[in-house]
Image (cartoon, rainbow, N blue to C red; front, side, top):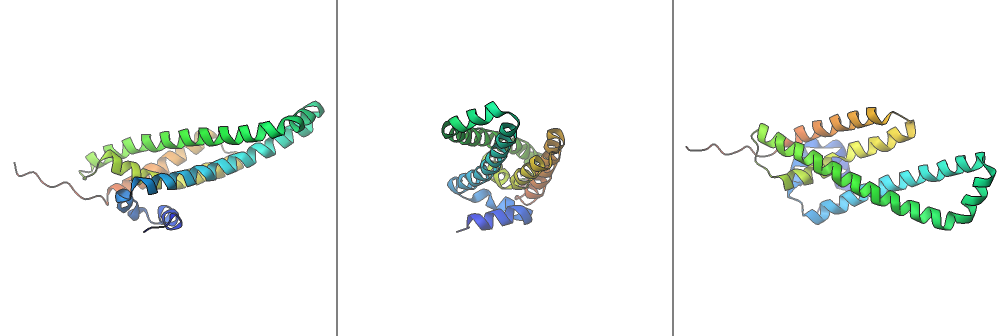
Length: 171
């Protein structure tokens, strides 16, 4: 059985294997997606912590207020970051999967939306890691979205080319 580390490495450096992972059990794919979500949530929470610290230093009253409610603020923020990261990543995977299913039809390849969803779950790894990097580098969200989208679609094209061809009709 394939480990999550092997899936991570292959999704970064082996775009041909993305098509092969369409046959993985959905449970394994969902586990991988939640590992990505955990990574995004941890980095977003670190940004939140450093952002609150910088803001709290500027305002003396705010510093005391944050200190008083941090037992409530931090767990709630972590939950909210996890929830929003989960929703956003699943929506992105679903949208790219629809684009991938259209690519399969255009390239005359055999596959279904569910296969492309699994492939997209791995193809989105680069995009997810780049979004973390772009947030630390303060790159415009518009630029980050365009770069991530192009990269994911290119990976889906490479993966789609490795799907089996449609059988020719006898009629």
